[in-house]
Image: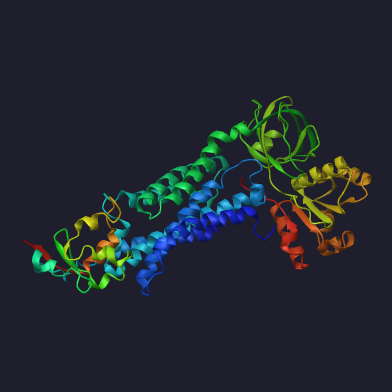
Length: 430
Length: 117
């Protein structure tokens, strides 16, 4: 992943700091005693924590194309996750620091800062907001194990209540109300869009064919029934199959990478049996309908660096590269050299390989080489050096199971490949 | 990240519970005077400047002279209420919003007597 900030990151950082910048002239700098420092820390962490909570809600939005200034939806939602984490931690520091700041005035005063008379309703709204945060964040941070995806998703809706309660806490107490109205409305609008508006961006597709690629892997071919999805190679979509005979996942949306080229009339999606929904899709009825939302992601990026490229794909992570290779073939040109290393356990699991080799035969600057784990062990430096001696100079895209990604990142970092030249997108828990 | 979130959560709960427990186990402050000094309106009115600033709030008189420089607002806001009943200002830090519990605790440090006719 690129390490330098993107345009979206800078906008987000500015929005996080906006309420604090508005409040600092009023808050000033604390006096030199510990109590004043704690009170100042309590106030600033409250302001920063609430800003992060409201922006975590804002960044939960899913609008095709809006994710790209942040480097794709997977990265945008990692930022969302970090913002939620920051808010949770800072808001607890906020409450505790304000209470400790009052300790020199006596413990009863400190306790009353935390638990005032009921007439001070705004403080109690803050506690309710915190309770709501615990409720929806405990599963996210795995306090009591990892929950089922759909249950987690439903519980995450409590975040809307946390948001409203937190605003109810802050607006009567805050010195400056306008930043909170601004960020609060943005957060609530994002949640409302997710729940009420986003379905309008879905496109109707018909599942034309279900082509088996290997055991437990199929490729769905989807034909548009109206407007056609415009996308770039390596992007992904949310697919919600509507086949009434599906054993699981009917109407549920799950993210899948597109294996088709942007120029193809039909969408193609490679699906591996990895869970209830993807298992059911292995035998989805041809002719049934599905909804497609997207495209999302920024796997290959929009701004080519001019360097040759090395693609490392394994498992179902080969699909963005299949889309990339099909796109090269459709356009008939390759910018620079592209080498795809297909990492599979054994030849029978190297689905798509025949097609990729056939594309390589027709394009002079595109090559593919297979690496089989059961024959050679994990990919090593000798293999890379043999097939791609200039790998450390190339832009490297990798996609595969987490263990493979981690191994390749270690291997490449060990050879001095800067992280800024290694690109991957993990569709984890989206 | 998950471990840090869980650790901070447990630390926060533990700290709040410790505050509650220590407060419950502490004996009430015996230093609170039973019958504070009586101060008349005339006496209060004599302390109406930055050199000596007394204020009456809900029947109790406070000497806040030493706090004027530390108060978050410009000094003029505090000085306006010296030497008289400042309950209205206390109850309306901003319109309709009283001062916080934190400020209430701090005010106690400046108590010098009770207002009498």
